[in-house]
Image (cartoon, rainbow over all chains, first blue to last red; front, side):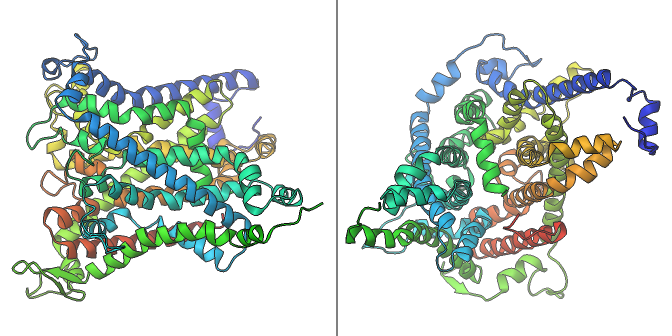
Length: 306
Length: 312
């Protein structure tokens, strides 16, 4: 119990916020915490609720007054429309391919490279790691001009001619730029947490470096790989600006672009936009609800080193 | 004990580091170093509108960007009014968004750090806004702020707070406020996650000790929690500020920098210059400025918090 006579304490005592008996005040504090958290959650989920109910309202109800906060005639028509009148199947397919391939590249390269940075003291490894992580600090939007130029007129490698503009390959290449440095960083920190004695044990048992890595260390790193994979997938799935600049047709455009296409110059098709938005938001909502702890551990391992 | 290794295996083992690090380095060089070099090069060029050729113009793109129009009386020393107003907008946008979401995130993180039942459930519910596509979030908020059929006007009217509709997105100051609200909505979860991780590093005994000593709640936060939380605060603020300066998604889909130029920020200006106006040189110059500002901010934040960037 507080004995200090700070002004803050006196104020709290005079407001009756502190009692001699500890338990009631703890209970009250908990109740307050629950109340505040519940209010916060309700407020931040309201927009998601509103876009959802918009997506199941008929277009006529979306633009009628007064606004309904409970849909009067719920319908799945908007969802049917976007897949029949618009190529949402292509957009979804593009999003899947781009996000999955980027994720595979990032976890493959990120894992092996992260492991080497964690275990070996090779020439310039510290500054190499620094420059890889530093590369992540380059504002992507600053590179929008050179990326556009390079993808429209790629440098000749192996007699390749033609443009990468408006292809899924372009997006995959671009998104590894966002995610690979991050993957190396997370995996390096994850491997740092796996004791090196396990590597030595594997070596004594006759494993080569590769066998030891694949058979002993890799299985232990699964949670780290899962965290990296989920984050890389979400970042690639959600990316908008580079997709906007580097694609122009349904052969490469992804869901975020598809959603933005509902905005015409002076008219927005809100009912269908909401349906498209829900499709684009689905992985985020599902990952958030089911893999929250992986996302959190991945972020904190990548960002906060302990 | 140890099984004799074949020469091939020994050779492969020797190549472990080059084979695991090499491909990543090549990849990163190709997708980052090359474009960055090209950015620096492009920023020194200008597209001739008549011949459509790129011409080398030295630092003239930077001068056009930052200072008043060339040829005018005071070409140097007088700032380009667009540059000043867009920089002001960027500072307002980033300043308000980051500080509001930081304070809100800190509060929620402290609440979530308490030993509450259903804490995991709350944490799950809190994280979702951050994982949705920013475009979808931006459009969602644009729909919420819509003047005739938007939920915010609807709710305020139903509650009897306002009688007419407020045109949130067609008034400059209100549009900026709407952007900040959307930004805070999207990025507060990130602050919460990072700070929550930091809070887990505070040793429980120190809280108990502080309580026994009768430290006030404020002094407990300042003397016990804050020192352990400092690295996380640093990371959260750095990433948040950097991201806000360069993020285009929300601004572009909500206001496109309008009405007028009232919500134009560096990111949307860069996009407009480079894409819409087809001036790659100027866009690249602005990109270089953005790059420099980013590194300056990171360096100064680490200086303020007295940490070296990569050894927390």
